[in-house]
Image (cartoon, rainbow, N blue to C red; front, side, top):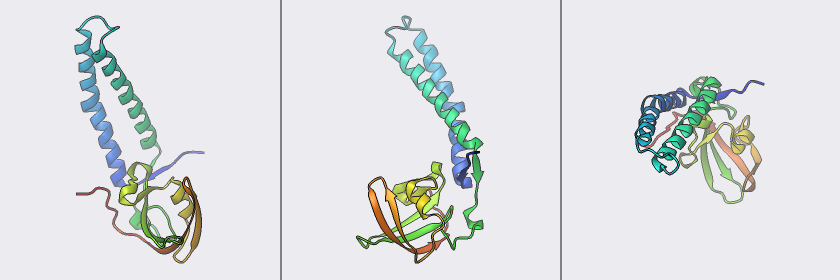
Length: 165
């Protein structure tokens, strides 16, 4: 089955910018660092050389990872979707039925998630269990920290804020 990575245009552009930075700035700098370290001679005890080679490997691995994600990317405009039920881009207001704490989450792509800002990944355990639910539903979710029960207070679309300014 083909893997699809839903994301907003913001997330897609963020990944493209990271690829550009890695290819045009960070990797060329590492190549220069390797060349510079080679001039110091003996490679066995050349910490700068080994550190630069390790950094080059990490950059290449990240580029491969990004190519995979971008290759599976499906850009979704959440404002075009129906939000009567929880779906990609929905903002969900729910109450923890044990603590009466009100929580608000917006479901976004994996590369866009930022739990501290209330942005949770479409593929996260919580989001997977919320998808398709509606206002008024009570839902028991299994999370790494145990089972919790929530009441869905509101499902809506609102402009997604990805970064604090």
